[in-house]
Image (cartoon, rainbow, N blue to C red; front, top):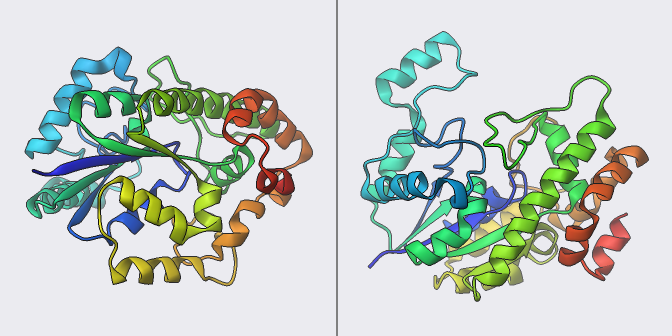
Length: 298
């Protein structure tokens, strides 16, 4: 019988890197972001849908995903005309990726999807899944969003937009990100605590500092086996010459990961840092309590 799991946590918190690590394990496939509102399966109601509000819709979508009946959106708002035409003809790369993953019929199927973060408990309780929730320091998270020019939704109102920083509102944006960080990670933390060990919390900083140790723990959590490819990928992706990613580059898997937890601070003003931390102080303290690594970074 196929085992199923998930990786969640806010977008830009390291979920893709962890998914790449797990995909090197024996007989494991990782399905990329089926609940992404922009390009995931059709009928996803909003960014970060809440299982307490959308249980019936999400349950139906999960059934379709696992049965191979789901269809990913074929077009994106950013598509130029010729790309939109090609996607409509071929079905788009997301549908091709989806069909290939299901055809492989792996022993373990992992949903790598930040946007299931508010349905993690449902995945455990109703679908017998195990999960990992990633979290990243609020300052590092803000820096990652700024680098990409990305925004965050307002949770609790079925928000279908990712509001970005505009003009000179850097501190206002930082405060908005802080509210999002606190609400989402507070929700995640509550689900982790109530999951009775089914959901493991993984700090991005710990994965960067000791990728082999943390990867071994997560691989064991999913009941999988590492391979020589796992070791090779970890070595390749963690031994770059710099911690800094290039502006606008979505993913860069060859970096000096031990320096990443400390590389963001100089990119934020004191006003931005103060604004984000003022909004998420309580949840931050529950996740990074008495942690010398984090205190050193600020």
